[in-house]
Image 1 (cartoon, one colour):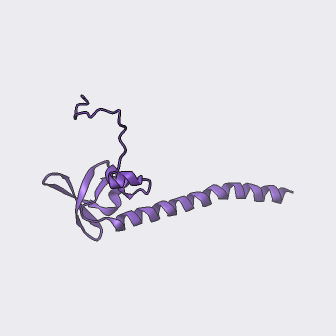
Image 2: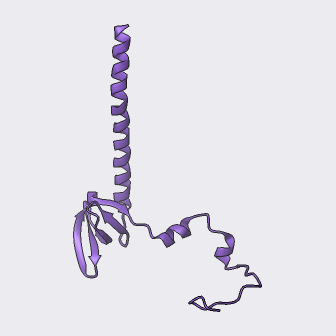
Image 3: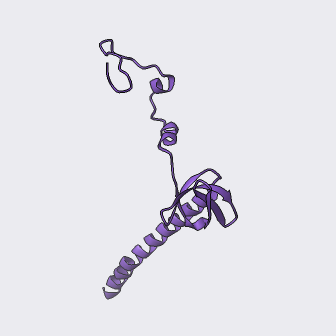
Length: 120
């Protein structure tokens, strides 16, 4: 009976360690995929919170333009994420209705045309 309790106790301790190791491996794999997928022109955020555009790629480093004419060199591991433009994300989505793609919109006949300021 005591050996069964000891075995259960060890399993309770080992399970979180096993799950944590799996989560760390997954995070490492995702970070490596991100770093290998970087291309010139990508907008990225560093672990320091700095946002810039990739202007050059080396084996272990990359160059970021953080302001017009200001270039800095970073280790690839310092890149946290690619910044996705919301307009590009909407175009990549399959949820765009067909009428938005073709420009065919129905306008009710009782609606008066308005200018850019919303005046009739």
